[in-house]
Image 1 (cartoon, one colour):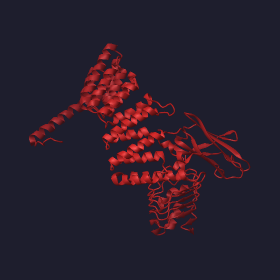
Image 2 (cartoon, one colour):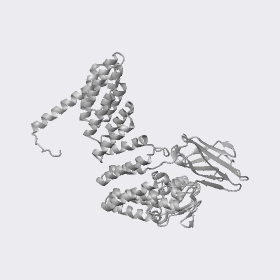
Image 3 (cartoon, helix red, strand yellow):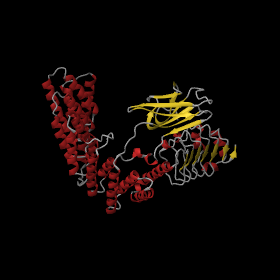
Image 4 (cartoon, one colour):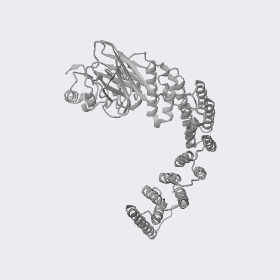
Length: 566
């Protein structure tokens, strides 16, 4: 142990300790066996209460014993008066305090204390608040105690203003108290609500909180607690559920809908109306699974989409905020129609950015840049500068943010993959935002991408170019791109394409100069039955004997392989 001298023991001392441990274990097992037998026989008496107490005093995480103890107390309620039960519960609270002194982070003990307080005829909630205060003085990061305090506050109807003051006191004594910062984030929307933004904070209070966070990270720039709270203050506003876009395809007799949030087809209330008439059909995910997805497919009844006239289609979804919908018109003689949100490019990803006023963001950027000048190697200051620049103007600050991310990679090399993916995300967002309105082609080639994000914003893309990047896998939900017809992913390091499944419009896939080593790695494409052209030149699989026959055995729909007809 730290700071303790190792004392040599003789063989006799070791043997004596071994016998002592065996004797304790024997008694423990005997008592446990006796209790299991008593519980089996539904014996709820004083002996059982005493025996469980002895066991739990040595092992307070023995959940079965706590449950048996609850059963004993419930049985006592039938025969004992309210005053007697009050005293029994009072003794139980004292016993629990003894257990907490030896194991202050025991889930079972804190949970049992909640149960006791709820069952107690006359609970003293103020005493419990004082108890929480003492335990948090001993260990201010004991999240078990913080959870229990929130339980007590709810039961005792303590005003959130008082708890906000409590969190202020805790933070003032130690800026590194992450639990206090977190608790504060739950209290502020209650004490200072923003009438215009659900779960938001009123602007004056928000500015004061920014000042508090700045004091903390200027005092100790390397402590992450205040930085995380600062990021919460900047906010990540969440848009309401909506139908982001629709694609109706007459040849496939189906409709594809993309939603702003994940939902489950079997649990959602979705309706499709065609020419004023509700259509009965089947909703499912691209993979046919009953899971939460952002892309769902509706199969029209056979011969529903007749080609000789315009057809008005309206899709609605019942949400907690009310009914949302989107409509489109499939013109006579047209094979398909697209319907999407008309969104300002700067607002496309705004749902993930700050709801704070622009002036607040600018002030925060200046403060973080000032701290960066004082602490040039502080990663938290640099990361905050990056996120603030993205929130204010991602296009204007693109080069600067990428330079800052490169610096983060050199400063924090253990997280270099995270920073590489962060750069990839930023580049994809900017490319999508700068795409021409209404275009169905997306060029992400030559950007050094290590990952592909925001596929939910690409569901209407027909041609996607991922060539000349640093991608190692396509084990991502590419199947969300249900309109995709051409995929170019040449000159990467791709070894797996597990996400390329169930895309009925996909006709050509180019994977030249990657690292696909076996024909079986291409098996996911078998579910894309329209793929007839495949380019694999420059992959290790091409060097294996008889690779073309292997490819054909896996992908029987292929008609052209590496430019040659099969």
